[in-house]
Length: 391
Ligand SMILES: C[S@@+](CC[C@H](N)C(=O)[O-])C[C@H]1O[C@@H](n2cnc3c(N)ncnc32)[C@H](O)[C@@H]1O
Image (tube, rainbow, N blue to C red):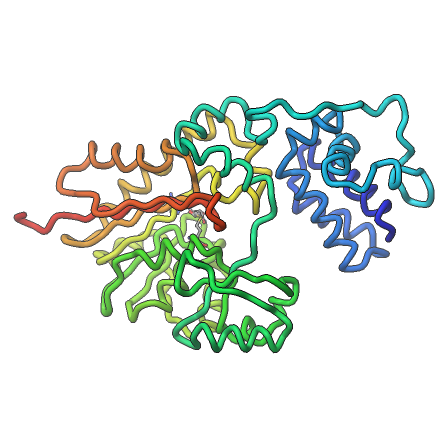
C-alpha cells in the first residue's frame, strides 16, 4: 500500500471508531476485509489510528472537524508531510482537499492543546500540580516499550545479550532494577528466544516498580486479588519465594495466566468465587484495581475520551468495595496493597483516606506516585497494614 492508501484506510477505521466501535475491533475488521494489506501496512495504519486517538481533541482543532478525514488532516498538519501530497485522489489516496475541508486552527492553550476533556482538567491539574502539563503532553505521545527481566531465570546482562542476538536493543530503565527500555527492534519481541522461554516479559517499568516496592518476604501467602492477565502476579513470583494465589472477578481475564506462569517458571494457584475465602488469610493482598487508566492513556487512548464524571464516580465506588472486601482477607499484621494506573487523587489518596475513615485497626505505611511524565506509565500505590490482634 502507498502512504496515501494507508491514510485513506486510517480515515475509514477512525470513522468507525467515531461511530462507536472499539479501536481494536475496527482495526481487526478492516484487516479482515483487506487481505491485500501486509503486516507493515497494518502496523502503519494502527500507528496512524492510535496517534490520532491520543491527540483527538487537538487534531480535530487542527483538522477543522472531528471526522476520520478531519483528524488525519490534523495529524498531517501537525507532523507532516503536507496533506496535499497525500490527499491526491489518485489510486487509493483520499480525495483531494476541497472547500468542504476545514482550515482548522491551532488548539487553544490549556485542555484543548493538552488533549484532556474540559470536565476533567480541574481534577487532573489539581491532582498533578506542576506536573499536570508535562503529564498531559506525555499522554499525547506513544508509550515506550518496556521489558521485565525475570530474575528467577536470568540477570540483566544475560537478558540484554540474548535480546541483542535477536536484534532487540535495550537500556536499563531507572524505575525498577528489572526494567529495560527497548530502543530498537520492538516489533521482534514476541518472536525473540528470551521472550518465548520466559526470560523477559512485556511490562511497563512503573508497573514493575509497584511490585518491587511491595513488602514481599519468603514464605508468605500472597493473593493478587485483581490479577487480570497476571502481569503483577508473575512479577511477584520472580522477586520472592512466596505461595501465590491469583483471583479476578472476571476469571476469563486470567485464562492465559497458567501458560504465562509455566513459561516464567512460576507456580500460581487460580482462585474463583468462594475459593478465595477458603484459602484466606493472606499475608499480602494486592488490589490492582480497575481505574480510569489515566496513567496509561497513551497505551489505551480511547479511555481518555470515554471517561465521564458518572463513570469516574462508579469506579470510585468499585475501588472502595474492592478494598472493603479484600481487607477481610488480610491476616493480622499483614498488608493490603492498593494500586492504580491513575493520576487522579479521587482514585488514589482519596480512596486511602476514605478506607482509613471507614476501618479502624489499619494504618497506611507507604504511598508512592509515579508520574507518566517520568518515562513510564503513571501509577499510584499505597500499603495499608492491619494491626496485630491486641495492638
Ligand atoms: C487494572 S486490571 C488488573 C491488571 C493486572 N493486575 C496486571 O498487572 O496485569 C483490574 C482487574 O480487576 C478486575 N476486577 C474488577 N472488579 C473486580 C472486583 N470487584 N473484584 C476483583 N477483581 C475485579 C478486572 O476484571 C481487571 O482484570
